[in-house]
Length: 270
Ligand SMILES: Nc1ncnc2c1ncn2[C@@H]1O[C@H](COP(=O)(O)OP(=O)(O)OP(=O)(O)O)[C@@H](O)[C@H]1O
Image (cartoon, helix red, strand yellow):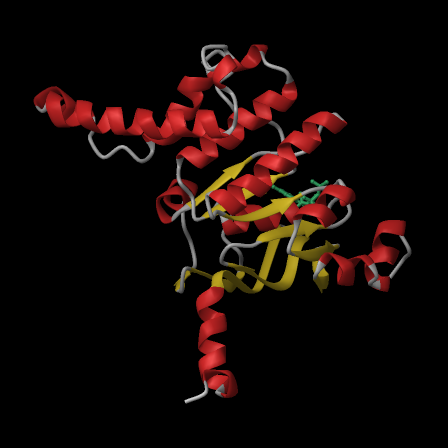
C-alpha cells in the first residue's frame, strides 16, 4: 500500500509527531481572562516560539503547560496522554523542565551544585536507602555526577564549576539555569525569555546553545522571547498571542507577514 496516498495513515503519523497538544484551553484569574480558548501543539524535535505583546498570556500558557496552573477549560495531551491537573514537580517526572524569566538559582551554591540539584529530582534512592545500602547509592551518585559533568562540558562552563552562581555575570547565570533544566533530561524544555537582560554577545551564545540542545541532544523546545530577531532565527514555528487569544500560528515568515500580528505589535486597536 502506498502510505503517502492513505490519509488515515498520514493523520496517525502526524499525531505521533505531536509531543504536546493544547486544546481549547481557557484560564482566568477572577475576572481577568489570561487565556481564551487557545489551541496549539508542539511537535517532537522542533523549536516552538510563543510570542505576543506584554500581557498577551504567554507566561500563563507556559504555566499551564508545566502544570503550575490548571485551566478552567480545555485539555492538554502530553506524549499521547490526556491530563487535567498536575503539580509542577510531576511535570518534571513526566519529562517537562523549565527555566524562568528571572533566573531562579541557589545563588550561594556553585554551578556544579546547582546543576546537581536539578539532577537530584531524578535520584531514586532516598536518605534511608543511602544509609542502609551505601554501595548502590554511591554508584547511583557517580552516574548522576557523570551526567552533570557531561552537561558542564556541553555548555562550556568548566571554568565556573566551583563559582557561586550569585557572583557570575547574568548571561552565565542563565546558562547555568539552562544546565539545571537539562540535568532533568526533559523531553520538553520550556524557556521563559532565555535572552532577557542579555547583551548581544550573550544572546548569540545562548542562541547557539539552544540550537545545540535541540540538534545534538534532540530536545524539543518551547520558548517565550521578546527579541524578534532571535525568535525568527531560532524557531521552526511561532504562535502569536494577543489579549489572551491566538492571532497567528505558522512559520517565522508566515507570522512576520501576518497583518494581525503587525497590528498587535504596533498597538492598533482591534
Ligand atoms: N497570577 C495572576 N493573577 C491575576 N492575573 C494574572 C496572573 N497572572 C497573569 N495575570 C494576568 O493575565 C494576563 C496575561 O498575563 P501573562 O503574564 O501570562 O502575559 P505575558 O504575555 O506573559 O506578559 P509579559 O510579556 O508582560 O510577561 C495579564 O492581564 C495579567 O495581568
